[in-house]
Picture 1 (cartoon, rainbow, N blue to C red):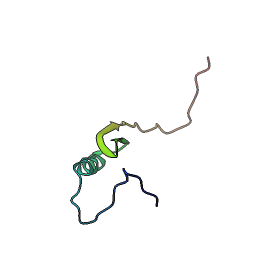
Picture 2 (picture 1 turned 90 degrees about the vertical axis):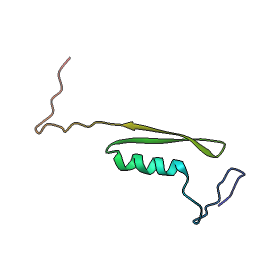
Picture 3 (picture 1 turned 135 degrees about the horizontal axis):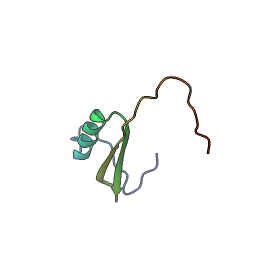
Picture 4 (picture 1 turned 90 degrees about the horizontal axis):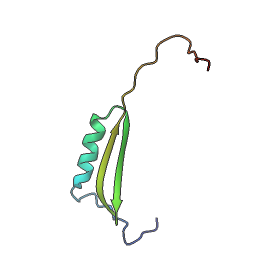
Length: 67
């Protein structure tokens, strides 16, 4: 795998970064949605969460109202 000056070297003995704990906690509480991680110069600078609320579809055929 090619590396660049910003490619992190994975070190299994290194401590967990703060942002990874935030992402893990958000994933654990999210039922439906999106977690977006923003990176600047190879560093995580922001974590955004967009949660969706889904409603069950009623049983039966779907109808379309004519115009």
